[in-house]
Length: 341
Image (cartoon, rainbow, N blue to C red):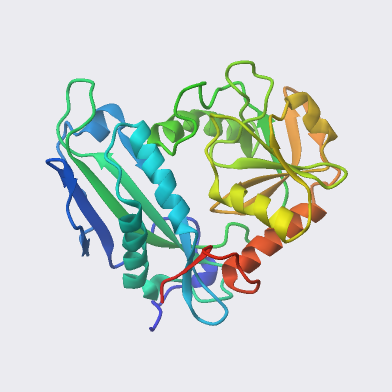
């Protein structure tokens, strides 16, 4: 298929309208079959549940062009499961997981001309989301919902290479115990916006959120999980019931153990032990891993031995191996790569 006339090398991380999107509606207790449509406009009541009480959740994944010319997605079944968990927590009807995978497959295939070519560093970002669509004025779940999937081509997260970032320990809380921190609810991201704007104004790239109960344990940032590397090269990630279960983090931990032969551990990580780690990274769909060079805790600097110039040794191996799997250079575990066309 002939690609669209887009300057792939200069794409940012922003919205570009593509040709098709998927829409399915939930009414009278069931989801309809859904359709692919060219209409990018959403028309809902001014009193819609999503507008009144933020009843919405979403996912994010990418489609890539591999070296052999195939268009693939990375582990969409896990996105389907996570959206189902998010919907259930928010009292929304679960969109069937098999239909989720088929919907994202169909949307990517319909927009194949927008999937950036191999070697450009760009990808096609896929955004599935769901929201309460009918009028709701009392505080209760909506009765009708809409599930949609759109795509947009995005540039590489790191232009010119990944440089370690500086983050701060935040005074704001991201998620309360027994709250919604473990699901991908829109409201979680809305409440983090002030914190990230404030962090940027203070000269920091991101926030490190601590657990709200004791403020002694590392949780995550506004949109990514933490991965730490000890001085003896063990890969450690924080464990908490209020952390979003990152698909990228889960994959990196598997890669560390089964591809690189490293010891891995998911456990509670205390802030006062962070200074003893050799490397630190933030992991998520957009960047895979963003290396962290420095954490500032109310004026006290924690500088990692890996430095501020480049990724640490283990972080770089993790990044190279996982992106190699995604791009088809390295054989993937069974079921990880979903071929679209």
